[in-house]
Image 1 (cartoon, helix red, strand yellow):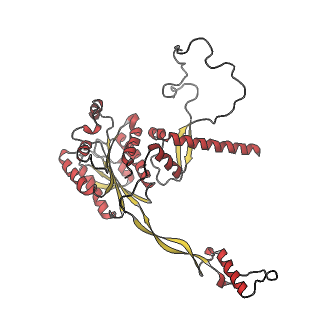
Image 2 (image 1 turned 90 degrees about the horizontal axis):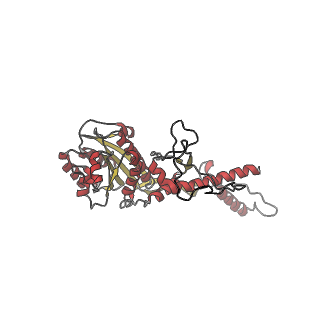
Image 3 (image 1 turned 90 degrees about the vertical axis):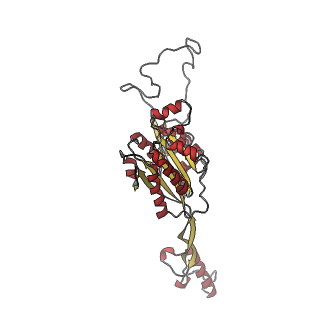
Length: 394
């Protein structure tokens, strides 16, 4: 039995250490993309983290000390052995020996929320003004003389029976000690209907599905949208998500279609934003809802549509939005690479949506721009985008 308790104690200590490490290293795992993007509604969240061992005492002493042998500090020891790890810790196919080991650690949504907020240094989101919905609910806070047996309040029932028995002379210690409740003594838990303000958010993901948005861009969009939705859901009592896509026209789709549909047509950003504004007008009274827009594009837009897009954004969306976020998914194209190599902003490329937003809306506090890269830097750039979008707590 003592051995069993010892194992349980070791397991508890290991889990405590694992959670501490997961908390301190969460930003690293987010930037690797090992955290699932679809976190909303999950009761447990799994963090795939690097393996570690609990420090322990070892008996005996090594036969040789560290650094013993021929040579001096700094001497070149020659090439590594063929069976050693390569630069990223992985062995060549067919090599002998072990590879890196990982461990899955499950945490509650509340724990992950604290880890996430700390790792990304995010403030809590403040709802805009007094936008909230009054919701009715039943609260058990009163006592009634009638009710179902399942709601019998035993303490209050016994108290009433005791008072009646004393008044009728049926309870007189030490001779008469039995108290028998009568039906008129029964008391039941009851409720009143109360109204509570609920802060709710409506999130609109808008995506350009023109031919220039390929699988790499789609993968980045899925990771970004999933984390944005989850963070907003942890800051509001209720959240509703709508998906809008566009090429030359804009329309609403479901989540699956949002991340899979493609088109070979042109790009008119205004069409997707017109559809999003229509949905707000129809379903989400601005006085009651906190409104968020996240627009994802590769940056290209029809030149004759830029003025229309700017007008819709300025006159219709920004006045009602808590936040308008834009993600320019560059996918590492040479078009942007030339600007990056010159040291210019990624949003300096002429004719792009990023350039338009940076020029026309740079002083608008509720507009946030971020670059989403591809390849090895994709997940890391998504995390940087999350920090950019929510760093002001809008």
